[in-house]
Length: 320
Image (spheres, one colour):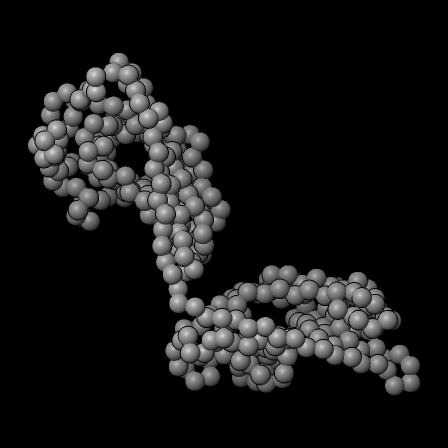
């Protein structure tokens, strides 16, 4: 922010604030610059971004190039300086925002990044200068913040609902089963998986298809659906002795049925004939480019109908 009472020619933001102080970039990589907002009075065409590199060199790009720079091209950056030029108004504010990615090892020593390095101090420096008058004018300020490192936590929340919850004996219309999954904790997930593989449920229900309302939540843009066919259900579930062979306990029993967007999944679903012998379903959600899906929950509505006979044999029991 230009806190002087007059216009100035230039405003500069530097990170880290002290030249050669690469402490934040020792433990972090610059992942992207996603916003550069010029202060009032600055000419966007004159904005320049300086990247200080590990080898001591400095590259200079304009605003557009800085915003489009890839993470790979920024991996060796150890300092960033943004210069705004023009006739910058008093009290005008410049704003620069970028993402950092924690490195597995320290850039300088190669040692592992651990909680012992926490907190990491990050100091930024700002300055304004004006070439008018006999000697010109210059002012500067700096501020710091800390980045605390924490042990990652990793978890998942799964939900399931069936609508309607009850049916009359003569009503064999489809019911809607909604399966939800959401990653939790501080660590970012690259994919989430939810399985509909309850043998007791599948013993009495047939899969009809995916409800047409199914949609993927950004940044999730694809789902892999795996199925089990050919399992053998035996025993008497009424006595708690339902036995299923060739089922979810063996990873080799799963086969990939389809991978794609919601539209692809819907087309696959509509092409199914008599549930295509499916006896279990597994859904894995991800972003096609491998990006983390952060804390994005995903739900899929599935249609099932009650069987006339159990897979294990005998009529489906009806509560009276």
